[in-house]
Image (spheres, rainbow, N blue to C red):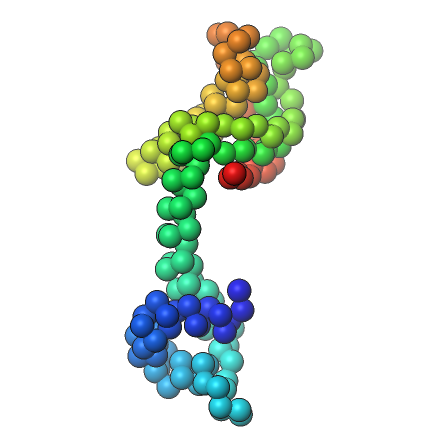
Length: 167
């Protein structure tokens, strides 16, 4: 999104009041007017310090709506989890299930998303959320939805990347 588009969004959010946008960004109303004017030669672009403030203000107002929509979608439909991490069962060295670096792409149901969001909302740390993901991945990936490998403990560590995608 361009800086102009971000400023237009902030203006629309604040009912096109340059005074309110100026208060949010911590600048004068005249400064905001210079940033958005259409008069040739009168327009002044925001400086680097102000660019960050504009971006932060937009994210604070835009992201909650997007997050709420994505959260509802993940809880209703599930999501696909992509990761590269050390993952496997705690097993004897040399077995095929011994923890090793794996790249896994796995669909996880909405119940897992609800559990992850509930943990995050309750203030759970990253480690607790990793336990939830390990349990869900172990059930879906290794245990094939509960059809095999019952009772084995899952190891999930050394995460290189983790990504979530939605329908």
